[in-house]
Image 1 (cartoon, helix red, strand yellow):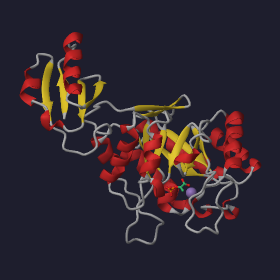
Image 2 (image 1 turned 30 degrees about the vertical axis):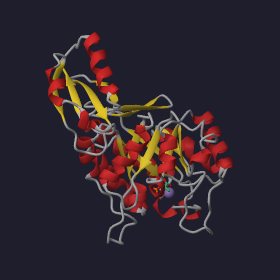
Image 3 (image 1 turned 120 degrees about the vertical axis):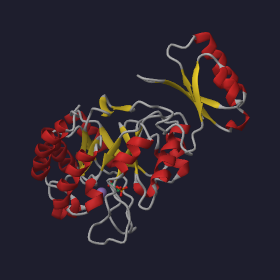
Image 4 (image 1 turned 135 degrees about the vertical axis):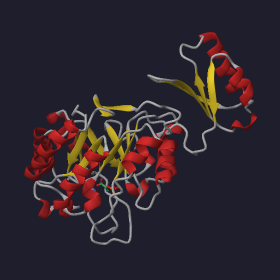
Length: 337
Ligand code: PEP
Ligand code: MN
């Protein structure tokens, strides 16, 4: 349920209204936007006397929200959210490109890719230290050593760092990470999501391989329900009957989520395509659809990559993609931060 307030509500009446709602055992989510100010009610609202609330002279209207996600819902927060990641803004008006290798393999590899993607205009550096591989015999990542190398690459380039967490038991080791990634395979790891809800750090939540948009938003809600509003959503392709591509990029996520939620949405064309040459056309589609950014895998020697080489761009190809992006991003009315 949402309570829409009249402009410039009397502060004493507002406090009384909030107190009355909270006395019913409900939580309130206060959102002061540019156009409207809204109180979102979270919990069992059946005991709320809607007519009595509507009769309050600071209240414009009261509406029921049927969607199961509340804090992630645009009705609760009409303005777009802007998330700050290590000082870089993500969200309406800003277009970010997160780039880097699928997996961190060595200091030389990560440092050289980091410097090159920065030169081409990437705004954050990605790199997997803990890799969720289908086979237990595949390269699992450099683990804590990888995290250490990421911190060094940040020191050298100044780029905020993004890396995937696998379990809530790793939160202490991830305290220096600027943006914690939840991979597609962990989108419904509810214990992890709950722990991230209280970690106070921005989260990049990737859509599960076979998750609906509502399930995706409910996973964001898990994080937000714990008090962490800093969630960025990432579409990375879903499983369909099609086998010609690694996954099917569901571009409709962008306009749909922009309507349903206030959270920023970025696109990962690398995992969607699974093929390097297709990354650029999908990236163009993402910009045109109104995405807030991209996540692109870049490798200095894709043929020798320990993970996801087939979909990785060389730094030179990435530079070409970024040149393409510049004019298209400004055409869409957005800017690089
Ligand atoms: C990744 O970003 O390297 C990754 C494993 O992505 P996803 O979880 O989308 O498969
Ligand atoms: Mn990958």
